[in-house]
Structures are given as C-alpha cells and as structure tokens.
Length: 440
Image (cartoon, rainbow, N blue to C red; front, side):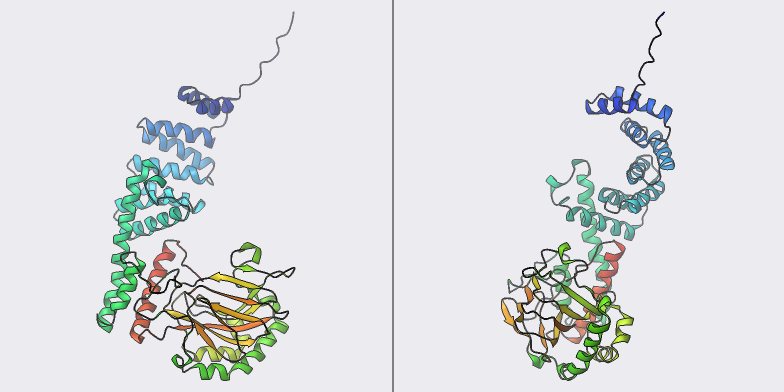
C-alpha cells in the first residue's frame, strides 16, 4: 500500500500578498487571518486587517488590532501612525496624540503623521502646539516637493493641508506680533517701520523688492538699507583696534596651526566630497576649508577661547552681533592650497562679515557680487555675504583669515536691538517645530 506524501505547507503570507496585488480583498483577509494563527503579533497582517476594519467603519476594532501590533513590535513607526489615525476615527484624540508622537519619535520625517498630530492638538485646544506641528509638517513636506499645489498633495488630505497652511500663516503672524508690540512701545512705531516690513517679507506677506539682483538672503531681508558689496572703512571705527591686533592674533594662530591641528574642523560640517556644490580642489590636491571656531551660531567654544586668550579679549571688546543661539560667528578660517569656495550666499543683510587677513600667500582673493578683492595681511575688509560670493587659494600655501560678524551700519541701534529679539523668537519657534534655521 502506497504511503501518501505529506502535502507542502501553505504559504499564507505569499497567498495574502498575491491577493492584495490582484485586489482580491476576501482572499487577502482570510490568508492574513491564517498568518495570525501562527504569528499573532505579525505586523503586516495586523496592519492590513486593521485597514479593512477602518474602511468598514469599525475603528475600535482597528485600534485593537494595531495595539496588538505595537505591543509585539514597538519600533515600527508605521504601526504607531496607523494606530493614531485609527484612534482619531475612534474619537480618542488624546490616545491618537500619544501614538502619533511615538510614530514621529521613530520617524521624524513622517509629515502626514505630523499633520494628523496638528489636527488632534487643534481639536484638544492646544493651539500653540498645533501650530508647531503644522509648521513642521509643511516644512518637511515642501522640502520633499510635496504640498506645493493640489497636484503635489494627495486628494485625501488636500483640505487638511490647506487648513494647516492657513493656520500657520495666521498663527505665525500672531506669534511674532507678540514679539513686535513691546518693541514698538519701547522704541516707537516709526523707528520699527523697517523691522515690521522685514517681518512681513519673512512671513511672505509682502514682496522683498530687493533693488540689487545679486542680493538674495537665505533667511531675512532687511529693507530700506543700501545694497552694497564691500563697505567703506569709515563705517567701522573699531577697525583700528582690530588691525592693531594683527600680530598678536597671528601669533596665537600659528600656535594653533602648530599644536592643535586636530582641533580644526571642516567649516562645511563634513568632508568636501559631501558638499560638492560648495568646495572644490585644484588638480590632484583635495579641497580643504577648515575652521578653528571661537563662536559658531552663538555657541561659545570655551577651550578655543582659552587657548587664544588675546584673541578672545579682542573678540570680547568688538561689537559683534549677539543673538541667542544664532550669533556671533567668529573663527580662524583656514583655506588650504588649491581650494576654491564656490559661489554661495548668506542668510541676512542685517549682519555683515568682516575678515582680518592673517596669512595671505599670493593668488588668494574673494569675489563679492562680481567684484574681486585681494586680501592684504592686517587690513580688514567687510562685505555683505547675501551677495553671491566666492573665495580661492590658488597658491601652494595655506591662507588664514579671522572671520567675525558685525551689524549692518545702515541700521539704527534700535533696529539692531529689535532684530536681536525678533530673530531669537523666530529661532525659538523653529527649534520647537524641529525646523532648522538657514545657515551660511
């Protein structure tokens, strides 16, 4: 008597996927249910079955299935997102908010999850947090080419996205008005007119109408001041102290180059190969633009300041821009032989960039707005970096300048004070929204 061969076990997951591909919902449902018989915490099966329950109007059952998936595999961002969406449908906004936050902790770039979190917080009356999440969602989506128009927005969330954009426009306006009103009272409304206009331009409520096409700030344009490439020395009475300190600063620089090479870091935040659009080398020599920071985006480098005490004392005395978490910026800028910093632009014309040249071999220069300036050791130069600018070292030696930032002298002291507070407020809101501030 012949013995019957054991039948091959059925691959229910493969059967379910085949059914999904061929839009056979009933077969997919039964096959995924069989998957759960052997693997009760299977994420794929639970997500599919929860989706069916939600489509059929059984949100509570969808929530139960997804909670099982989340407990079995808590590191899957998509499960938490789907759970949050299901809890929204089930009338549990607080549970939805918790699940969506968990999804975003695992997947910070999930802009639809952030949109839904904004909706939930809006429903809960947490208006500021809703504003933060809506703004973050819009920023991430638009940086990926989404939500720029109806064509780039999924039909199912189109109205929600439009609501979020309106909410952000109104909310940011109201938020920054709260910053501006005390400044108007302190300095006078007339004195704040250009600051008000700068804010309106930043928020997209007014066109910038920049008079010089070479000037394109990446962050904040301050109107009503002349557009200049290089600024006359007469604007900076502190040049005398800066230039008189050249030998002292250069002596400390040489000590850094001789003893602290490992404390230099790439100015652009990574190897030149990571940013091919900003730096290139000449011939076989790799490009290198390094920095020894004293301040960066307002952060103090205490060890570097202690290593160069006389340079630190000089920086303390100079009228640097000081904005919480943003400025000053001060450093030794080290451009190696054959390196070319390609054309780029800075963030705002409210502050200017000053160079004190310390070591300048032949054939090194900077071009700002098409105008070339050849550095001279010990002779400072100040320019508006919102103009397209580039710099090069075509020599066989290293070039070093001390870079620091200062206020645009065409602004009043009151305007400088107001911009300090306004940019700080913008930075605080962006940080809360996990939206990076432009740098450059």
